[in-house]
Amino acid sequence: MLLYTLLIILTILLILILIIRKDLFCPSSILCLSYIVATICAIYNVPIWKYKMHLNSIILIIVGVVTFSISSFMFNVSHRKKKKEFYTEKNISEIIIKRENLFVFNFLSFIIFIIYFYYFIKGIGGLDSFSNLSYVMRKYRFDLLEGEADFIPTIVNLFSKYCRALAFVSGYILINNILYYKKLKQKKKNIIPYIISIIIFVPFPLMTGSRFDLISYLIYLIMVWYIIMKRTSNFKINIAKFIKLFILTLCIIFIFSFTRTLVGRDDKSDTISYISKYFGGSIVMFDMYMQEDHNSDQYFAQEIFSSGRKFLAQIHLINEASKNVDTGYYRTAPNGIIIGNVYTAYRKMYNDFGFYGVIFFQIIMSIIFNKMYYLVLYKKENSKINTRIIIYSSIVFCLVFHSYSETFFSTVISFNYLILFIFILLISSIIQKLNLSGRRSI
Image (cartoon, rainbow, N blue to C red; front, side, top):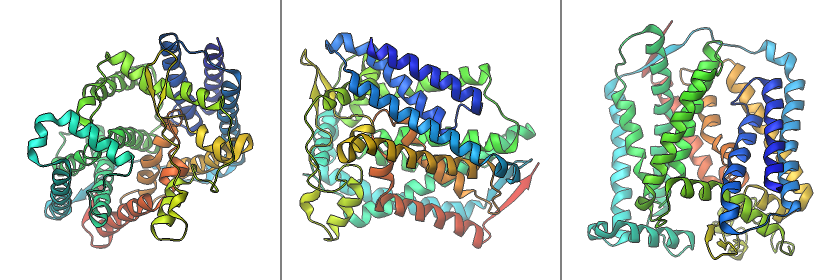
C-alpha cells in the first residue's frame, strides 16, 4: 500500500512539473521519472520477496523528490527574465573534421585500448580465460569491488579517460551532423570515423565488469540529441516521438539483460524479473537500511564524498582507513533472495548528514543541474563544439539513476571526472585552435 501511495504522489508531481515546465527532459522531470520507474519495479517484486515497506523511508523519498522539484521551480521563476536574454540558435551547422586528423585521434585511442586490453588479459589469467568468461568476469568484478584487484596501472587508467572523452566529443559531432543531414534530407556521409571512436570506447566498461558507463553513454547520446533539437527548432515531445523513445528504451533494456553474462552476472531469471529487480531493489534496500540504528560516521562525509576522500587518501592527505567499507553491502529478502547492493541516492546523504542532509544536498544538486540545463539550452556558444552540452549530457545519468544510487557527489565530483572533463576540453580545443574543423549551416 505504501508503494502505491508513493507511486500516486510521484505521478501527480510529474504531471504538475510537465504542466509548469512543459519539458520531459528538464532535471526535475527526469528525477521524478527515475523514482516512478523504480517504484513500479519495487511494486512488482515486493510480493515475490515477501517484504513489507515502512513509512519513514517512503516519507524521506517523497521529501527528497519534492525538495528537488521545488528548488527547480524557484530557480525557473528567478531565471524567467534572464531566459529571454539568452541566445537560441535558429540553424543547425555541420561540423567538419578532416579525415586524417580524426584518424590521429582514433589511432591514439586505439593504442591506449591495446595497452589497457593487454593488462586486462594479463589480470584475468590470459586468453584461455575466455573459455569460461562469465565465471572469470564475476570473480574479476568482485575483486575490483573489494579492492583485491589492481591489474591496470594508474597511468593507463588515466589515459583511458582520453578514449571516453573522445567518444563523448565524437558522439556529439555524430548526433549534430546526422540531424544536419536529416534537415537537408541528404544522405549521411563521413560518419564512420566518429562511430569508430565510439566502438573503441565500448570495451572499456565491459573490462571493468560493468555496463553502467555504457548505459550512461546511451543516455548521453539521447540528451545531446534532445538539446540540439531544442536549441535549433521549436522541438516538443509528441506522442509519436514518445513512443519511439519508449521502444528505444525497451531495446536498451533487452540488450542490458542479454549481456549480463558478459560482465559476470549469473542471474538466470527472465528479463522482466531481472530488470525489475535491478531497478526496484534499491528502494527496498533503502527501506531495510532505514530500519536500522545509525551511528554517526567515523569520518566526515565518508559516503557522500567517497571518491574525493579516496583521492585524498591516495595522496596521503588523510588516513587510508577513512575508506568506507559498508557502502555496497549486499542484502537478502526475508525469503532468502539476494536483492542487491544499491540503496538510492538518499542512503549516502542520510547516512552522513541525516534528514536535513537529504534536503541540503537535494537543493544543491537541483541548483547545479538547473543552472547547467539553462546554459546548454539558451546560452550562446562561440566554439564549433559546444562543450557545455557535452559535459552536461555526460553527467545527466546522475538524475536518471538517482533512484538507483548516488553518483553525483560521490562519483562525478572526483579526480577521475576532472581528468575526463579536461580531456573533453582539450580535444575540443585542439579541433578549434589547429583549425581542424569547419561548419556549414542551414
